[in-house]
Image (cartoon, rainbow over all chains, first blue to last red; front, side):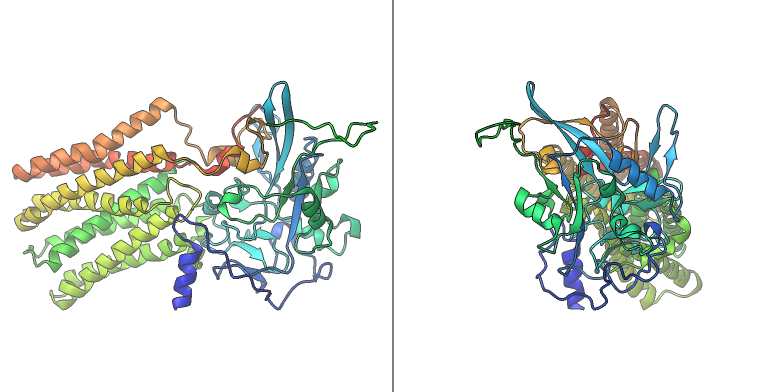
Length: 286
Length: 311
C-alpha cells in the first residue's frame, strides 16, 4: 500500500521531474528476440498482443531496459527532401489498421495525420545563416510522459525493445497523451478517433516475411542521404551508439527529463574540398 | 491549449454541484435547522448537475463507447482516478438523497453521509485539478494554485447556488449561515484566481526553441513547420482567439465570475430576497465558463515551439 502510494506520488509529482529510478539491471523475463517474433506483429500495433512484456502502465519508476530501439537523426546531412515523411505515411496508410487521415488532399487546405514531419529552421543572422532541416517523430522516451497519463492503458512502452505504442483497440481518443507529450509527437486520427504516433515500424522490423535488409523503419530505408540511423542505443557496439558517442548526440528538451531514446546529431564543420591543411572551414553560428 | 467546451461545461457544472453538496453537508454537520423538504431538493439539484456534467465530459472523447476503459489505469493516471471519483460521488449523493427521501433522519444522514460527501467532494476536486497539474511542462498548470482555484471556485459557485435555493425555499437559518460564506468564498476565489493570472503572466518558460531543437545558436527561427495547412498540432494546442478577444474574455471572467457575484452577494446579505442571489448565480455562470476558457487558453504547451511558421 505504501509502495503504491509512493509510486503514485512519484509518477505524477506536482511540478517536478519524476524521480530518477534506481537503475537496476533486472528485465522482465519474457524478452522477445529480434526476428523470432511468432506471427509478425500486426500493423500499427493494432493486433499487437499486449502481453506482460509492457512497462510503464502499472508501475512508477521505469526499469532499465536491456534493449532500446531508437532512431538517430543526423542534422548534418538531412536535406529536407521529405522522403521519410512520405514513406512513413505510405507504409502506415496501407496497412491493416486502415489509411491515415488525409483530408482535402488536392484542395486549398490539406490536413492529415503524419507520424513524422520535417521542419526547417534558420540559425544565425544574414549573411551568416545556416538552414537546418529537422525531422521529428516520436522519440520513444525512456520515461515517456504519455504512458502513465493514459486512462485506458492504450499507451504503453514495450519492455522487450522500448518502443512506445498505442493500442488502437483500447484508445478512447481523449487526447490526454497528446497533452502530456512535450514534443507534439502524437496526433489524433480524425476518422478513427484514436491517437496515433510513430511505431518505429514495429510491423516491419520483426516481420520474418521481409528480407533482412527491409526489416528497418520505412523512413530509414527511404532517406537518400543516410540521415536516419536505426538500432539499439543500449548496445555499445551498434551503429547508433557509436554515432551518438562520436558525434555528440543529444536529446530534445532535456530540461523535462523525459530521456528521449531518439538522439540528434548536430551540425559540424565541413572540410573544404581540396584543402591541404587540416583546418576545416567552420561556420560561425553564434 | 484549445479550450474544449465539453470539458469547460463539465468542470464548471460539476464544481458548482460539488460546492452545493459541501454546503449542505456542512449545514447538516453544524446542526443548522433545515426544513424536511430542503435537503432532498438540494441534493436532487446537485445530482442533476453532476449527471449533466458527466454527460458533457463524454462528448470530448473520440470513442465514447469505450469510455468504461478509462477507469482501469487508476494506478498511474489522474484522469482514470477522476473517472472513478466522479461516479462514486454521484452514487454517494444519490444514496444520501434516497436515505432522506425514503427513510428517517438518523446518524447515517446526519453524520456519516455528510462526512463522506465532504471527503469525496474534496477528492474529486483533487483528481480534477491534478489531471492538469500533473503535466509538469505546462507550467501555467503545474502549481498548487490549480487545485486551490478548483476548490474555491467550486465553493463560491456552490455556496451561491445553495443560498439562492435557501432564500427561494424560505430556509432562513441556512441563508443566514451560508450567505456570508458565499460572499467570503467568492472573494477568496477572486483573490486566488488573480494570483494565478499574475503568476501566469510572469512565467519564464523553461523550454526555448534552442532547447527544443538542440541547435545552439543565439538567433534561431523556424522557417517551416513541415506542412502548409493545419494539423492536429496546430488545432489542439492553441486557442486561435485574437488578442482583443482574449482581453474581453479576461474582463468577463473578472467581472462576471467574481466581481458582480460578490457585489450581489453583499446586496443579498442586507436585502432579504432571493433576487440578488439568483442574479449572482445567473451572472456567475458565463463568468466561470470564461474563467475555465482562460485557464485552457493561457496554457502554453511546449510543443507549440515546433509549430510557428507555415512558410
